[in-house]
Amino acid sequence: MTYDATQARQELLDSLAEVIDHLGDAVGALGEAYELLDERNGDRLEDQLFRPVRSAYGRAQRTHTRFAEGHGLPVHRAAPPSAHAASHGVKGLVDLALEAVEQADGTLVALQDSMRPVEVGDAELRAGLAEVRELIGDLRSRARGFVRTLGR
Image (tube, rainbow, N blue to C red; front, side, top):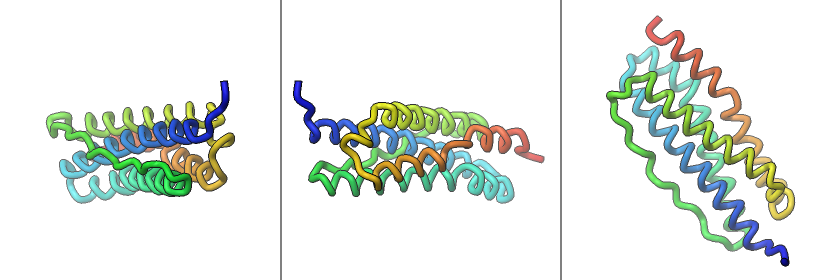
């Protein structure tokens, strides 16, 4: 069986597209949580949770686009974030965002473990993946701290 570099690059991009979609869902859930908060708590949510997830989302998109264009492959167009009912409340929306981020991180781990980024990727792609993981790396502890001090 021959190793097809184009197919491996496409699989890599498909995994990264999945990461982008999960992060987009997290951005959407955090945006909806923000709308339910007063100004002080909204600012905290933005600083501690929304900004890092939004940055990771943007970095993942840029990484995908640059790699796809550099290899003549189709660029993923991110799906709109899933809509969540405000009835989930702030804690529920933060939990939904956290779940989406954890799914994104799991996909990134599997992608990096597959060695595809080394075998058919490049340094810029690997740096992008590492930066996304760094941006979302401690989100669970930040989310727990935010929810624990909510309303204080």
